[in-house]
Amino acid sequence: MNDRVAVVYSARYQVELGGAEKLHSFDIRKYAKIYLALNTAGLIRPEDVFVPEPADRDSILLVHTAAYLESLKDSKAVAGYLEAPLVAALPAGLVESQILEPFRYATGGTVLASRLALEHGIGINIGGGYHHAKPDAGEGFCVYNDLAVAIRVLQREGLIRRALLVDLDVHQGNGSAVCFAGDADVFTFSIHEGDIYPIPKETSDLDVELPAGTDDAAYLQVLGKHLPKVFDRARPDIVLLQAGCDTLAGDPLARFRMTEEGVVARDACVVDEAVRRGVPVVVTLGGGYSLDAWHVQFASVRRTIETYGLAANRSYPPRPPTAKEKLYTK
Image (cartoon, rainbow, N blue to C red; front, side, top):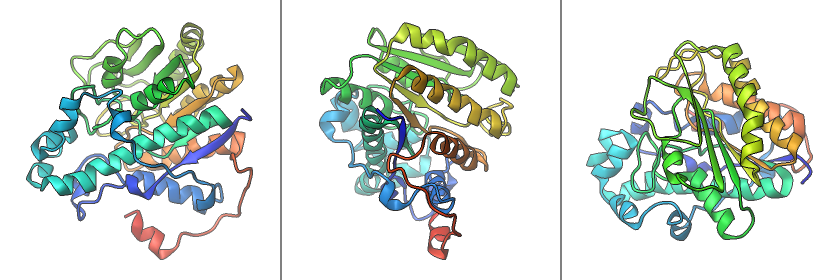
């Protein structure tokens, strides 16, 4: 490893339903906005980005049941998993091509980012983090648990044995907790708001519940207290970070009061601790529902790239976005 950053992204992460996707509380275009901002800021160019293939059925079956995958052929079931009633009225073929396939690409992105982390030190998937999906059910806009799939793929191939999953989304990583329940080789650690979805919560190896109103200082104190101990207990070969930014003040689905600077510092704590210990680290972006969510995650990714450098070891001058690029992210 050389502690460089490999960035993974595909335009195929984008769910396209003729504009109807904008009615959902989750802005699927935030990934495109982050990717464009990284380009226009001179941090990356398209040729520096690793483009994934979609996760295949055999890889997904390492985590999810065959019966669950069969249920995805039912538009009504998928509508429930996504909390998007409109989807129930769509033909199954459209759901497959415009919704499920993008989620498989995002899952493949986390698998690829994990492989690249083993090679370069740090892998960032500009997407992923779908931590509510359980082996036999989706929920909370999560269809496939890409974090779990990535860990199981690397284990299957003998690339890792032990993994640490650090989940800092404001909502508990309940799906991941279920996926790895009773597995001594995968340590699940979740810091989340205690009085919001999901209710009831599942049991991670370590759950830390914080109250509404938690600010930067309180959050970072708790993270700093637990993180070194978690690394010591987990003894991981790889760390996967679910870096949802719905901890940000003003998020419509939560009540923490973190600032952009606090969220960036939060993510840096995990990345820097992994680098310090010589453990490959993977970043996925997870939730974030405020208008500023994409910008906060851009700032975090920017900090990681500027601190450690691209795997390609290049930098570029900033540039304005083209008219076509602006249209793509709207």
